View 1: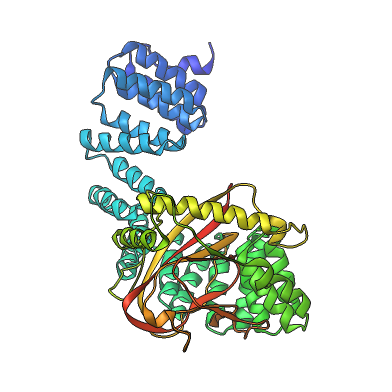
View 2 (view 1 turned 180 degrees about the horizontal axis):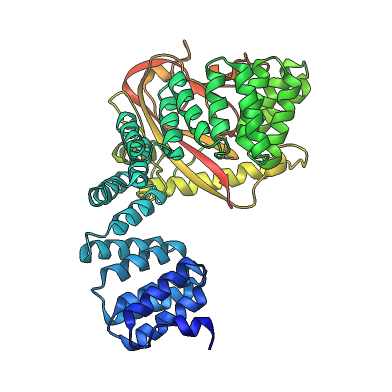
Length: 509
């Protein structure tokens, strides 16, 4: 008789079979564990916990289909089994069936509200669905059930950070560290919050602590180098970023951050090479393309800079015609303006009576916005048809065959100082449409409320080496431009808001 047979429990001893199965699972022997669960289930067919334990073993063995079959079998007999609904939620998440997963988690919450995994799983799902305001109470319920779980407090902190509640986020991350002082992710997250709130020296301390615990922690050298750059500690920043690209040669963002440091040091040629490395792993990265144009200008290579920043060739100016259901563009814009004003504010912004941005307008578009989405898609397609493909050009050589639109509105009554220029690094083409403009923006005087292209932001530490241009907004005007073009709104104050809709064209994956 084999050793296994000598140590096997009698078939009638269900609990002993379960203990054996669990030990075999932990030992990485799923096949033998499943055999024990099968024997246990045969002796106790009314016990769903045995079948669910077998389902978990199938998940660990990479066989989600069998796990799903067993979980559904339990629910057919016991639809009130909360832990089965919880497991179904996990499995539906893994299959990408997020609506079904949410339904399963919520049903589990009704039936078994004391299961920590219900609220942790639901919270994680809602984060993935970009619904952090709903994820917050889910994680808080999980924490109430498991107050010492550092991971749950860290997850809550990430949600609060995404909601723009930075003080509360940092407190949540610190609470995670109070329970697990060597929790690297929490140290990194504290560094991220401090960086977002311009507390760069404190952020550097947090990143340094993370690296003391784990010098190989992914991405931390990059974050550390970024704040050291902002602190003007360029030697240390370069060292940290070279460490980052050595550890992860395919980390495009680390290559870009290194390029920024090199440009600040006056090493324009080396900055171009670092941008090339970034673009090799992330073709079309807008930040790298814009920085390359500046670096080429620094070297006096105006031809290379102008090839990248070519307003006449690469931008488009379109006057939209109204959809058939609206008598004219003014009526269409009035409908758009009403729907935009009613749209919820972006999660990460508190909003105010002088400036706010909405969430993505195309997730569940109301009637005028649905018509607008169709008009924008048609305008983008027409603009693409006017661009002559050029294989060696980073923009013209990357015209996407498939793409998706995201859009958000900006409602402004005041820009007290010039906005810091920005770009949209992960998109290919961007645009802005002007819905409603106050009189001060329509005037040709001091360019108040106009859009300016071509001026780098202060953190790039470079004056533009190519021409800047300003464009006067007009109601009904649509501007299209490469997403790597830096742009900003010039200062103005008005009683009536300036309403525009910005959008990105992102290549489909």
